[in-house]
Length: 492
Ligand SMILES: Cc1cc2nc3c(=O)[nH]c(=O)nc-3n(C[C@H](O)[C@H](O)[C@H](O)COP(=O)(O)OP(=O)(O)OC[C@H]3O[C@@H](n4cnc5c(N)ncnc54)[C@H](O)[C@@H]3O)c2cc1C
Image (cartoon, rainbow, N blue to C red):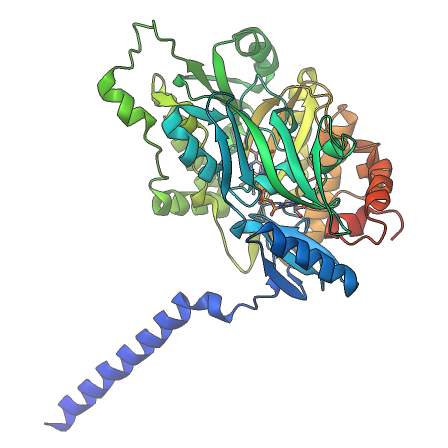
């Protein structure tokens, strides 16, 4: 072999070895992660816990809580970790990872109810009930979340006929701080029912939950474009008044030339059996009732990334979103309509993060609130990536209730640096938007960052101190802990 050929072979071998090592490191990245370092999807507050207990059976969870009591350790509880303020973990605690506690325990097709372990996701429920022609009544706009996490935030969705999730819960079992298990419903241990739902895991571990279901009907999509000033009255006249609209949401433009002014609305309208315009025949029935998986994740991730970085990317993103207007007339099942795209939003930059926030304002305050957001985003130079709107019907249940009256829920997705300066800036800007929501008679969603200050949480949730007192009455040693309670509990 000539010297030149040997050198070439060695060069190729070295390149191959380096490439293999690189690939190994990339694909085994998770192995290097500290298993005790827990963080949520925002990556804002990584926290080291003392021990991880995988939720599998109730007995194991009971044992873990009893042992924590004996050793005087705190307990924190995690589901899919899509809350964004350290609600689902606490430093040096015994962390219960509920995701493995996910069996379907009972299903009553006739009564339209299902009982599941709390680590199950909405997707697992949908997969199970879809063949029976049934659907969830209230859930988030996606199906990746756990039932325990969803109950603990008392979530809301896109069906204008319902308020918050609590309305659709029949009962659950709760593992208390002393290791006992209580049945909780509107008639058993009834005080706990509105405290635990929307109670961020501070009263105990939700074990299994019985939920009400509804029919998996067919919808036809209906789109409309309008100016934000016309939205509230259009909504009341044409959407709220129309009982055939099963799901509704709207998007506000983030494009620089129509920023928070243009909107497009999506309605899913019930297709009745006698509707000749949209007949659902035998052949299409099977297609329509097959649960769809998310498509084009890579492409959508790429496009979304452009809007993170560039104004023209935001313009393009809005342009692409508007193309959905041509989806008018699409027939789909309720179950498919209730599992929209979300995977493409996953983002893991070490430098910056995407955070969600949500504000609830009375219907007639919508336009003026949006004007205020536009001013804050401009003056603070915030990177707003998405703005959607839903309607949340008033509900009279839930101790920390964000839906005391009919409101529009405005969901904002921001990108901000993970540096201390970036976080401080977002905190201050958030406080301005919270003040704005309060000035409009509104409130904000507790499930996201802990940026609002203690005065603001008390203005938005006047019941918060009574809630904390109840927590200490049921859990005097403050066994169940999270960062949310640590920040806002007045005794700290
Ligand atoms: C992309 C995205 C979209 C979203 N869309 C919506 C939406 O459309 N509507 C809406 O209302 N919300 C929405 N949210 C908010 C989300 O619904 C809540 O943050 C919800 O709590 C997430 O569920 P999880 O399983 O991730 O819970 P986690 O974040 O893991 O936990 C949330 C809370 O529940 C507690 N908890 C978890 N399991 C149990 C249990 N078994 N027993 C007791 N406590 C428990 C935790 O301790 C924590 O306090 C969205 C969030 C994201 C990131």
